[in-house]
Image 1 (cartoon, rainbow, N blue to C red):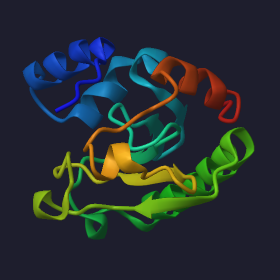
Image 2 (cartoon, helix red, strand yellow):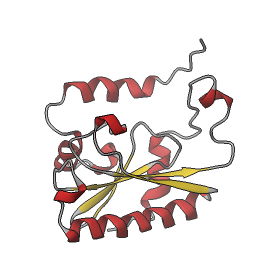
Image 3 (cartoon, rainbow, N blue to C red):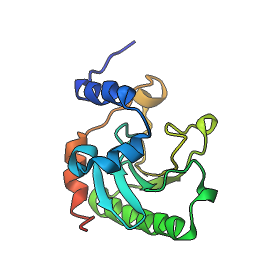
Image 4 (cartoon, rainbow, N blue to C red):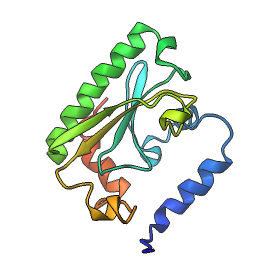
Length: 160
């Protein structure tokens, strides 16, 4: 098996395991947006970098309301989620020029939700060939950009 070192992720992995409560609620309460990858705070939702991205530019739209179900958030929250998702698509298109996107929710742990207790919408830019032999056969993701660089590239698209 091949090893690709990413020591910058160790601090996040070990600190996330120690924090009580919901990671999304904790991050928004910290008011350390750049440190936490929060690009934009809307009225009812916020936009954040995925700290374990599938590809560079993998973002999430997260409601402030702590809920495991989309059914339980009010119409204003779900409407703003969609409007912010459109902003995310425009920003990623402008900055990264992807060939396509994956966007959606994973509801519940069995459906693949890493944080099942707090809904969030993923928007993942995709390029032809981004699932190459390293991902498919080597079970290793290659990300060409550090999260800090991704944050700087995208922040200008989300001025409050």
